[in-house]
Structure formats: C-alpha cells, structure tokens
Amino acid sequence: MTHNIDDHLPEPGIVEEPRPPIDPYPLSAYVSWAGRRNRDPILGVFKTLFPKDGWALELASGSGAHVNYFAPHFPEVTFQPSDYDEKVFETISKTRDSQGNKNVVDPIRVDLTNAETWPHAETRLYDVVFVINLFQVAPLSIAEGISELASKALTPRGFLAIYGPFKVDGHYTTESNQNFDQEILSKQVPEWGLKDIRDIEKIAGKHGLLLKKQIDLPANNFILLFSR
Ligand SMILES: C[S@@+](CC[C@H](N)C(=O)[O-])C[C@H]1O[C@@H](n2cnc3c(N)ncnc32)[C@H](O)[C@@H]1O
Image (cartoon, rainbow, N blue to C red; front, side, top):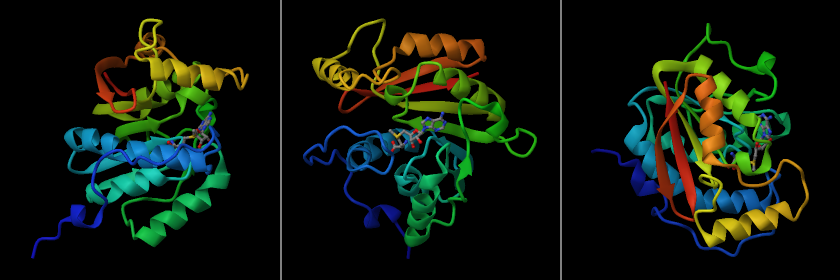
C-alpha cells in the first residue's frame, strides 16, 4: 500500500483566523498565526524547487514550525534548523519529536551578524538555505550575513530562498503592504519595516548571488530565489 503523507496534513490554503497583535517574538501568538497562514503557499513553491535529497538549512527558524511542517514532505532531505536565540531550541526539538520528524536534526546557533557562529563549509554544504519572515524585523544589513553565509554554505547548484513582504523599487506593491509597514514603523523600533527587494539584490550580488526569480505569494508576500 502506498503511503501518502498529504493524507495526514491539513488542506492547503490560507487559514483565515483573526490576527493577534503584531509581536515579532518567535514564540508569540502572532508569529504562530503568520506561520499557519504562510506555510502551505511556501510549501507549494518549495515542492517545485527542492531536490529529492540533500540538506536544507533554515536561518532564523524561531519556533521551528516551518521546518517541522515541511520535513514530512521531503523525506530524503535533512533539515537543519537554526536561530541566534537558543531559547527557541527546546520548542523546535519538542515539535520535531512529537511529530516524529526523523529528518530534522538538532537546531544550531547561527547569528547572522557574527560569522564565527556560522556552519563550516568544510563540514557540510547545503542544497537549500531558506529564511522566512526575518527582514521586516531586522536591519537591511542582515542581508550581508544571509548572503555571505549562503554564498559559502551552498552547493554549486544550491539556492537561497527568502520569504516575506517587501517593497519593490521603492514602492509598496499593495495598499495592504503599505498599511502593514506603517503599523510596524509606528512601533518605532529602528530596524523594523519593509525592506526593498532591490537593496537586498544589490547586497546579494556583492556575494555572487543573483536574484533568479521573484515569486508572488498570497497576502502580498514574495519568495526571492537567489543562486550563483
Ligand atoms: C519574526 S521571527 C520569524 C521566525 C520564523 N522564521 C517564522 O517565520 O516563524 C524572526 C526570527 O529571527 C531570529 N533572528 C533575529 N535576528 C537574528 C540574527 N541576527 N541571526 C539569526 N536569527 C535572528 C529571531 O530569533 C526570530 O526567531
């Protein structure tokens, strides 16, 4: 009998639930709500891109909701979660264990602003490096760390996928993105706010990564795909 993992997972599509107040803390109700909304659209794109087997490194994993949701769909890919905040590691591992995700390894500490914490390319290269919903709560300079790390950690044919809401050429692509940006800017945290795809592209270019695709996803988000 063939076993179809999709039989055991919720139907794809955006989950419409009331939005909790904006709170970037990775274990907050808001981040959890956002993850339930975006996980299926991201998974749909990843299914068209991921290799059959290999290694995928997630940066800024937070609660690990995404790696643990994606892992059963790619049984021959090993997922490496990471974050700079070790307080989230227990949640990532507990979710992994409760879901029986044998292809999610223990989280590692990776601070995107500190190259000394990055995984060593001599130990392993990754087929995929991905990061979800970091830029709107981080300075644009985080793109330096992401790009430099990815340029060193990716296999020759590997790719970097960045998911989130962005501006394009200095403009908002929708009114709802503008409203969202104004809402987060009103919190007056200096690094918060939507970043521009062109600025990220310029920084990635310095590290030899080119923007190959810009994929529109629901709720005015994008997946940006970079490779050499
Ligand atoms: C808004 S949460 C998103 C978490 C997860 N990607 C998600 O979508 O649910 C942002 C995450 O970025 C992490 N983070 C922020 N700055 C970082 C840095 N310099 N290096 C690595 N992780 C960082 C935080 O600890 C947090 O887990």
